[in-house]
Image (cartoon, rainbow over all chains, first blue to last red; front, side, top):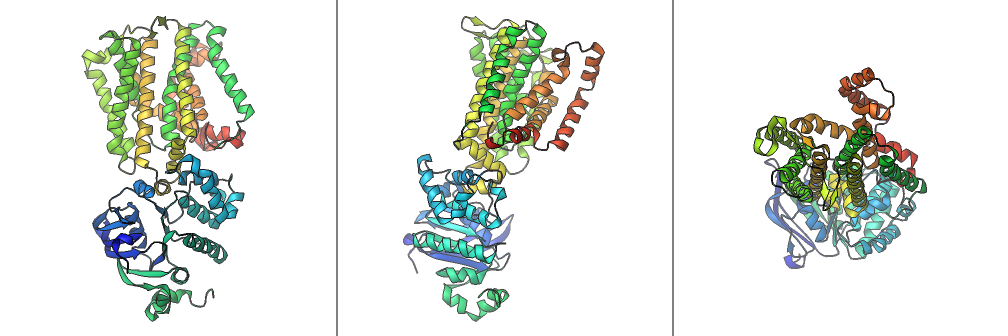
Amino acid sequence: MNSKSSAALDISGLSAGYDRVDVLRGIDLTIAPGEMVTLIGANGAGKSTLLKAVVGLVPPAAGTVSLFGKDITRMSPERSVREGLALVPEGRMLFGPMTVEENLRLGAHTRDAEEFAAERDRAFELFPVLSERRTQSAATLSGGEQQMLAVARALMARPRMLLLDEPSLGLAPRIIAEIFAALETLRTGGLTILLVEQDARLALRHADRGYVMRTGSIALHGAAEELLANDDIRLIYLGAWRGEGE
Amino acid sequence: MVKRPDIRLIAIVAIALVAVFALPMLTSERYLLRVFTFVGVNVIIITGMALLFGYAGQVSLGHAAFYGIGAYASAFAVLTLGWPWVAGVALALVLTAVGGLLLALPSLRLKGHYLAMATLGFGEIMKVVFVEARPVTGGPDGLSGIPYPTLGPLEFDTAGTAYWLVWGVAAVALLLAYNVVRSRAGRAMRALHGSELGATACGIDITGVKVRVFVISAALAGLAGALYAHVVGFVSPSTFSLHVSVLLVAMAVLGGTGSLAGPVIATVILTLIPYSDAVIPGLSRTALETIQEWQEDIYGLTIIAVMLFVPGGIGSLIRRIFPERGDAG
């Protein structure tokens, strides 16, 4: 699909695990610059582990990961942030007692202090509610606002590639729509996005392409519409949502 | 974050500073000044502990060892090698900083309570070293006749001048720590207390931050030791035991997280308990002896009471009075 050098993210033959238990087995995944790609699959398929292996939180046992042509396979997480890779972790992992503004400042930890105000205002434009909450501590925000803050915090590092782990988890449909609208805006702005989601239908409706993970390997991949139309996918991953939404 | 400083806060800090530095002019009672000099020494150590525990969320059970290394290094340098006191202080700082680095690097790479365990072991090892390394430490008898601190022609040989020296150093240490916690580095420290994964996702080198804070806190304990040895004139191994390390942790816990003022207040209170007669005039000898006898129990009860009634420590109490300050202080 894309030659390796032009890919935003290129994962090739990646295996990883915890304490000799293999969770990922030979993952191949490529994302072109500006694409929004989703990774779907059941609980325990290894989606979060794949993200962790990409950012360097879980050391890969084999395979390579490259970001815009640069090998980042065994790079520490803080180095990969500097290389332009930002993660919105599952469960948001905000700094609860600190204010919205301070959380954003921490997101800009790797950037020059002078750039902060402009970046912050851009995040506020994307999520205006955060601007109203800027002096509030993150712990006092609603779940949706916290998720918005988690995305905004990741954006403060000015990433070229954004990884999101379950951004819709536990949120009301209206909030989810707002967050996904923001992701669309970011994609239009040129950001490359890899989205891990349990809500496969939601993810495929927004993404360009999708990868389906099953017990540690990629079972299937293709254009989002194809996957949405694929009978097996509908049966296995979309069934639970039938009758909801739409 | 740029916040307008609270006028009340500035007033309180200013009054506290004036009160602290005016004490030798208000009283000439040697005992009182000695006791408060000792409080100042502990404040220097606790400044590092507040950064380590209260901001970076790490527990050290071996800071008395760094305190001791600083004390013995400086005493040895001045007594045996004939170095000027400043060089002794420099030696104390270098040894404790390097020691802290060597201890922190391997133990902080791992997640969990490895630092607490490593420092506990380190403290016990150093206790043995202090007793056994007789040529340097004087063994169980310790070192005596350690000269007063000198800075060129200045000699801090009275209770009042020694007091000023110690509190001057404490004030500078606190000011530097205050600047650290308000800086990007301080924000990073508080962040990893909140969520290590979140901090990592922000590109913060969490191991690096922890190691740096540990080194700073070890060096501050070493600095306090170098002051203690020369102000008191005598050092022995019992001053640097596990008991002292635990007491330091108690001061930091009692003071509360994310605060500098809280731990300082806790340190003043806990340090004064065995010397109650210095601050409570007319305290009878039997009453003092009772307090000293029950010292450990009073510490324990104080900590339990604080944890029950003010779970966030003194720092959270201060935040309740000055809500707009939020973070540092």
